[in-house]
Length: 195
Image (cartoon, rainbow, N blue to C red; front, side):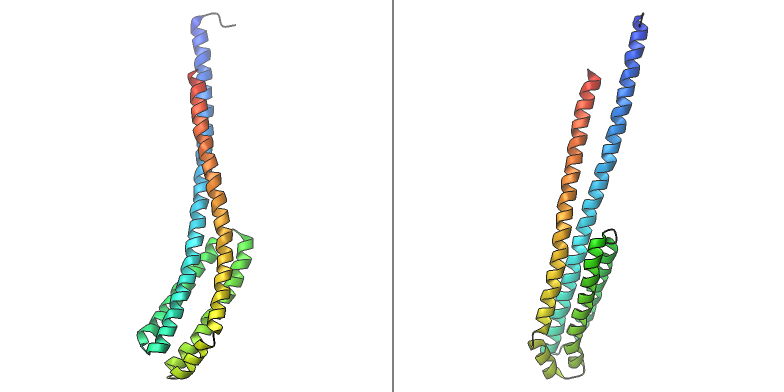
């Protein structure tokens, strides 16, 4: 078929170039898929952080509310307002981050309603205290409705976090598999081309 040494060398060179192009295309695609996997891992981390910030803001607001009622120091009342704003801001980010997941959106909507109820419940004794009725404000806090409301909110938030952590673990596993595939492809492909 190939009569001369030159034509044989040309044919082998063409095969090597084709093999290199196939290897480069495969590595490029695998790299793109791996980058996408890590983007989703980062996305999960942002969801988890936004949820943690939402809960932390709410807990800090509750601390500010109680501190104001107990100490009558207005700085704590201002702290309450700032922490509620932080919690709502983090929750808004959470809503945006989970738009791609309809199941989570249902949970987020319910959590948003619980967040609003929790803030409204915390505002009751704060309003009483701001109006000078610290004794009634203390009684409202001692009733424990706030504790129950916070517990329900935290449990709902924890369920969402658990689900997101499972997604994150799956995404990390997927990214690691893709990296291993890229590594194997580079080793095998390079060795075959060298042969």
